[in-house]
Length: 448
Image 1 (cartoon, helix red, strand yellow):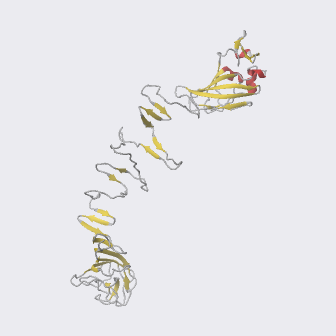
Image 2 (image 1 turned 180 degrees about the horizontal axis):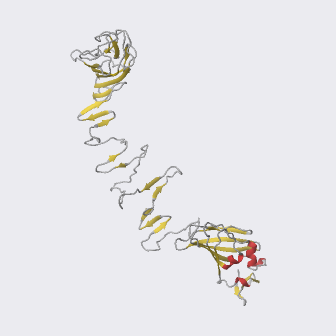
Image 3 (image 1 turned 90 degrees about the horizontal axis):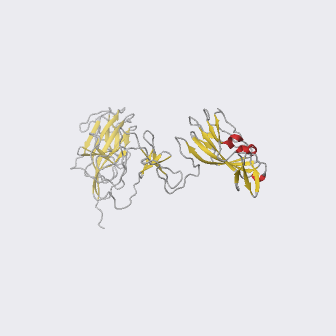
């Protein structure tokens, strides 16, 4: 720009490249500024004189405004520039947002202008603009920092702040970054009455986050997560439970409100029932009041007991159970009792009343050719019946019991009076639940 001197009229002139070029006296010395106040309830186009004056107090008056700079030609004319040698001068203007609510002012361009930087001024803040004359028909306007009033701070735009250390301005206040308080080596997210979260993102973009959040408590309580002293680094993984769940784990009494998986099993001296008189069920086997109870199965039978080092040897006791729908003279169970087994107990109950006809007067349990080999209605005291809840309870005589020479399918049979002979009419409508308990054994395995 060269040297600057003031003339007798209170103006000044610039000396550039050996030439003296005049600037309109109305500009005045550099330290003299003119304050303009704007309260228009609408968008405003500022005059070149207002911008050149240096300070504009703007009340948006009820809404956000998109105010407009004057054209480059108006700015150049107001400066009294007529020679290209005068190009390159820079002056500044500060616009102050005096809104009493969250109303912004966004400065818009006009003919011949190029705007650079953030042009928005927030409530109770001000922004400094540098206006550079690029040519006699063009100007570039740069936005500088945004300076706050009583309720804000400096605006450094999208570029941000680059520093090695940021220190608190007020003792013991810490430094707050967009609602997160950094203070005395601690991080505090949110504040009293304002929820805050600590969020961690994975290495892969948009693939889930880990969030640590606090819930309302009855009092001003603190929940602390810490670790015991350990000999090496550890990684603790929260498994996918398949649904939302609450859990508490501690060295004392603990409650697990959803199904949990313990891959390596559970080591404990005692497992107690949670609900009184409910017992504890382990993989379908009920342990209750000193007894073991297994549900029946229509497949291979539920295992009640096994003696041997594995399932391929020794003695097993199994229970097979099925509700047989009746629609024929002989109504078989789905699966047979296997060859080599000894049947100990066959019990049955008519779940729904049966319908007979002809010589069919009752029902029995047996095989083809021996329809009551495993009991009949009323057994052990035979009583002809097709009624619901009529029962049969057959207990094998172990003195005469023999292993089955082949697989044997037990059937619910239509029987004549007395139950020993087959009836001539199919059982219809009803069903009978049958439970069979049997022994089976395999030789012990060879030594290795």
